[in-house]
Length: 366
Image (cartoon, rainbow, N blue to C red):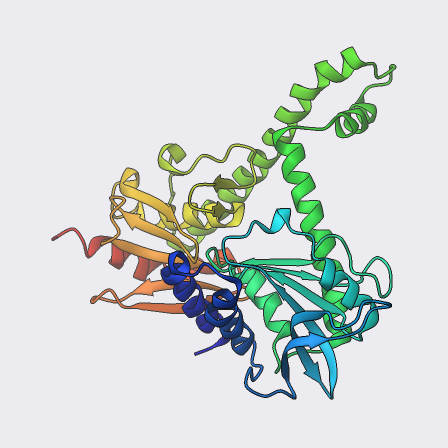
């Protein structure tokens, strides 16, 4: 199995056993040690993984951090573990913070066996940042994050590259959160900044109140227009390849794209991206040549974005695997076996138009 498959298998194990794990020790044995092992480190080799690692701190003697991963006899990662049902938002990683400053480790991990928060010293040398640069939830595996996590594995670990990537990850994560917040509820500072770009008068509270809904609509419309442009470009390409006009499907049965960029299903922890929806529209435009477009439905889950006929899981047309650096389209044979085919861009979907049409037509006799 590759690294992603191993992580998915561990994710399934965590989900199946979570209700039976209550103590910190059980969390370590059932979840954390298998996680460290999945990273490629030998949890039974004391030269590589040291439980209850001791590093004296000032006048404090004999304090222990739960695990240290060593390389050439020196710690490179420290793990502080909590029971599986602990809310990490309410935990202060005090030991991890102290040990970070007195060891050579540049990566600190706070975990309850389900969530893993990775810290470094990006902002100030030898002082652990207050915010993680990477967070992985084993009950909600996002493939792009797993690709980043792999850089911490034994076979891929390069400290300089990891620290550089950590800085980019941390600030990218923070900026995405900020942008998402402004799309849903623009802050006073953001409203003031945007207003000043188009309004020459004094930006009073009354002016800000007037501009806030305008800014929110403008952002949403801008993103919607970009989506429409990409859709029209995709339709034009299909017309060029097919030699005939293609009618753009009405998006009445698609997920709600409120805020323009993503649709978030908080209950299931699923995020639908703009790129996935653009790809869905391409697939829909293609198979609409052989079936009623109203029958083509999206179904986004944690590990892939599915395109179904009649919104029926037993009638898959294709799957879109866009959560890794390398994108794949999953195509189905007559026995519903999936083959992942790499694609460089969503426009490459047109190369598989015949197979997509055949998949949609294969259910007509059901």
